[in-house]
Length: 274
Length: 267
Image (cartoon, chains in turn green, brown):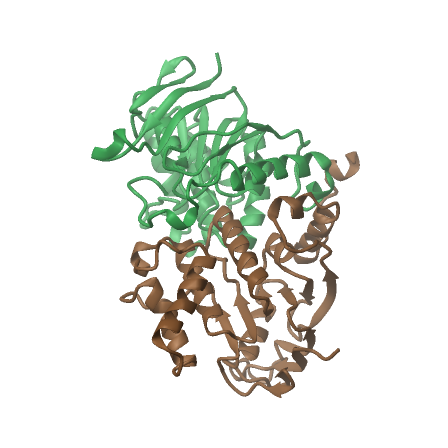
């Protein structure tokens, strides 16, 4: 049995949920230690899917199991990183991470808790910025703090919800390379959702496209057979990168395209749909 | 052949920067009629400075801009501009936002004809069934489609695009680029695009001008983009030169990889 198993999952919001689910018929298995990316349009239901795995939402249909046990709510076995960082502004970077460590390891002596925090800040390259508050940090650095916090509780699985979506293109490119390194050294099972095919290909072992909603469903999985470490520029002359990238883009802009085109979609996204 | 849009010996020095060096200096670029050229470069290198001078929103310190041989001396309706944010009036429908521009530029045109022009472009950008929607009811991508329809509606000689899709997610960006290509294939314009998205530049352009690092930024290398038109995404990314050009542009923008990668060695 796979580490994470998602079987025939569907989810909708509001009274019309029965007629128009956001996602439906989702089948997905993620192996232990695997990094899997789901790539799709904004508003297609990627965050809904991730929230179901996080246990922040319950499915209307289907089942989700983690390590053989049904997911019934949030838990410390899953660490989440959101697009908007979700740091407490009045706490330093160190205290934001410490808060999570105190919750999960209340029995640890103080110095062990602090050592854990420092270790995680070092992993994300912020060893010297522990005293800084979120507003003193750039967007990229804030997201590093959020990643350190998610990893500090030693989760079995890391859930990344458009982790680089709020960053400008150049910071994003730099942090993509960094995130690839962090994920490699953390050795976690990772589920990433993103709208960026290149980000998915740089980070994941396998990429699954999600069609446009409503009623979004998964398309054919693409194995990413690129050796690591991966590098954004050099991958361009690897035929495996070209093939995987073209397959995903052509599926997303072709069969996976939103029904009736983006133009027909109404603007305000519901609830957790990003 | 003479240039349709000519940018010559352009230099721009900002007063607030003191006696410092000009941001842009010795910038030369000529576009033929109907040609699509992208300007790419590092962030802050002065790409948008050049575009705003061509738009007439900023004055050059030296040099100048000619459109059909006439010097640009301020903003004008011979240029349609699309910015990152479409700046629509929130209380007007998509149709009325596009009509507003057309009324300004063609006040003598009959009301019915003005509406026909506006509807035609809104249909071309894929908003045929959203004519009566207000900006608040439209997604970001749809609002930018209105911005494109508005720019074409005034029938400009030159289209100026300043990171028009920079605020959109990457898949919506692909869709909008296709919408722009579709309109351009019906209504060819001389166009200058500022972007830092290499896939966008490759998909849209006939040539890509790479700016050097500022200060004193100017045009360094110019790449010819060989993909046949009309362009369609799948054909473009399957073109044998696509990834070679893509890598070249990424290296120009971001520098060589810090360490030789395993992949480079493997292939």
